[in-house]
Image (cartoon, rainbow, N blue to C red; front, top):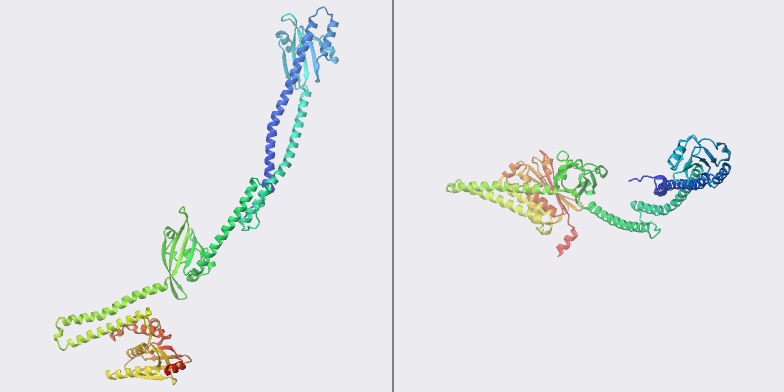
Length: 616
């Protein structure tokens, strides 16, 4: 999978300082709100308490002065001014002393001395004079530039409920708010400075965290790419250090597991490559993901063409099966392919690959070439059928004639000998067939041991031809047998009896299938190390289609005529086996309506070896 690149703002190197920054900002937010609120509240409360205390102190000083009737107005005014001067505050404060008649009798403002003697005309002052209750309030009048604290304190005389007047105090709060603003500015500046310092420190701290993490990330990338020679650097003994050690141990285990897996893969690949059966593996959709060389050979396809293709198309079974049919259960399918005019029969065994959960992940198909097996089975079936048929015919004749004799035909001197002759002929025919079958069975199981001799082939052939010519004269038929031999001496190492059986069979076949009075040519030709014996007739000949099967067991071109003449269809098959046991070969060349030529090729014997053997 392709890795996506990330920007600086997406990296943990940036996220850690950002996290610290957010934490600090949230902390400063809560601290600032609480601190500023408490600071402002506390400073204002302290200011108001201070004004209240001084106001109480001022009224306690003014009460004796205003209740002393012995003092004249100037003396009284002087003492009240002195008392007002005792009101100490750094804020701008305006004080008025109002008598019960709501007349201003003193003030601390030198520039407003003209107010003395004027009426206050204030509902607030009048209310305090009547109720004798202190009134205090913070005034934020839009018409006034700065807010102030208004305090109206009643002046109570020595006599109970004696109202001597009120003191009106207006204390400016601009300095208090200004001080709070300055403190807030200092706090914000300090907070910003702390954030900046914390940000720098957090960047260095995050580098200490991200460097080991980045190192481990690079190690993880190397592991994914199969590089294990550069372990992650361990920067400390903390959790990150332990994690780096663990990743290095993991890399070693992954490397060992990958080496083991690669070894097993190579071993499996070698097994698949050299095994005698074809193997095809698919995914769960039936598309080919693996195919070995044997399967490619059996199917006659290229690997690049097979990979990724549906196995139904690869085996040409889409018309007969669906993928679900193969996945549902293990299945065996026979596939017949025609490759270069050669029919190949394959057995495809499908096995379903499942996980432990039962989920199907694919199929495995094993291809086995059963062409020879099917051919052998078919030959076996044909053999049993032919033997049964060939034995049934003489047995039927024997049974029929035997029953006729039992029914009284044996008493007829004219018919009985003929019936017995037929029974004897059919019995001999069965004996020959059984003898031939036993010979073939022994040849198939390598139980026949040849009695090898150095033989003059021309002498043996002459002996056989002479015997056949004599036999033909005895039965009144005449075939013209011509002999064409090489002038060289021809010696071969053969089992004389077996080879006489072969040559005799070829000559008898030539006589059987040649027209009366026809010509048969027996030719012996030698070459450097081979000798060729051929028998040519002038019969009807053999088609190419029949010639390909002529040496198969029980195969006959003209079955009706062969049975009529007592043929079993095993002579040429036995001849082929015998010739091949002598390291030779036999074949036929034929033209329909012109005749056939059967040729035997045998290795020549060395004359020097023959001379040595003769001397012994």
